[in-house]
Image 1: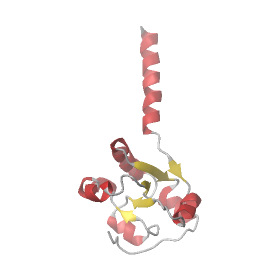
Image 2 (image 1 turned 180 degrees about the vertical axis):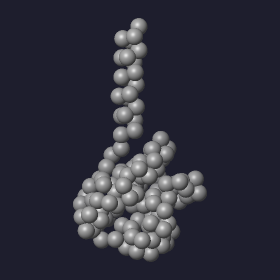
Image 3 (image 1 turned 45 degrees about the horizontal axis):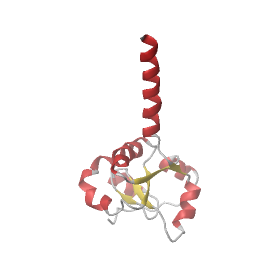
Image 4 (image 1 turned 90 degrees about the vertical axis):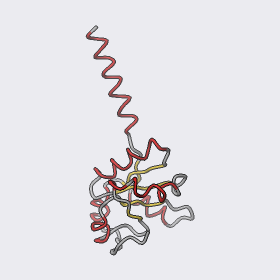
Length: 130
């Protein structure tokens, strides 16, 4: 009986990890994509203050804890590929886990804003225009 419980627990953990697994995109791939005719929608889930201090060109700001307030905006992007980032990954992960079950096409920017800045890639300053 103990062996059965251990086996079921392991299977449940493996299955859970597969559900939560997030697809990602590297910053160089995102740069190339942004020059294409079908560019991804970039979503910065940091606070409005962090966004104003510097964000990726073309990004829209939807703080991770304000998904409900932006449902109408998000719905118009449901069939698009969304690239999500924050400063280090935690908030983007929460945002992705909230929207993935609702059928959104989501990619997590590898390394988030920390990696973008470390690679000396361009940022835009100022508030969101959405």
